[in-house]
Length: 244
Image 1 (cartoon, helix red, strand yellow):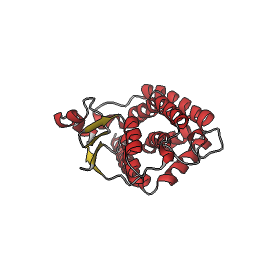
Image 2 (cartoon, one colour; image 1 turned 135 degrees about the horizontal axis):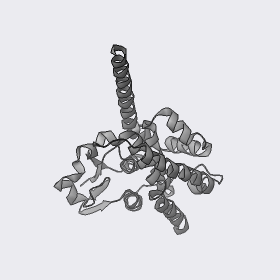
Image 3 (cartoon, one colour; image 1 turned 60 degrees about the vertical axis):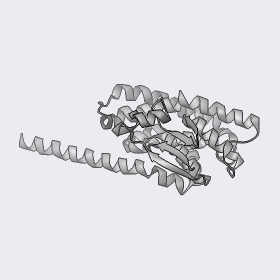
Image 4 (cartoon, rainbow, N blue to C red; image 1 turned 180 degrees about the horizontal axis):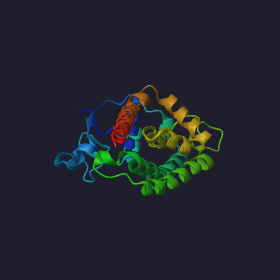
């Protein structure tokens, strides 16, 4: 029975898990859970993950949720996964785990809430909030500074001075990729000061292509839709003003 991955590609953790499976040749069935359509609230999905969040997996009779736990499980149980993703060396594993633990209450807290409150909220029937977006941007910017000054300060191309990516690199870079859908000037304002972060993002993309690009293509489709919608709204407002 093939591994089942329950995911919404608009979800950063979902993208990280899907890319990991594809890069490492893990056979899986992708079960699409559309968060905007409340698929995660159905009784069927609640049986897979009672927390009602994506991603989640079912491997035979084994069910698991939380993306970091899933990545660790996949790296540990499937044959053929390169050691650099989650090394056998316990000291290296502990360092990777420390990055993953930090991620949730820092980078993820800032990035996810910033993108939601500045751009995505209307898709879930909620209003945008510049105040909340501003608060989240502070957390996001502080997190990017930490990544650059703590985990990218070595000679390696990846986190913790490594020459090849780990599950921490993949998870964090997928998080930052959310910024592709926000206004270009806002993305430049946030990421522009962090050149080492930008290079690390490119290195992680290159190490996981073509799968990284394919899985993230949904972001660019959403970006184009939002840009078109914004242009149409601007044209409509101009037309109204011209008649006044």
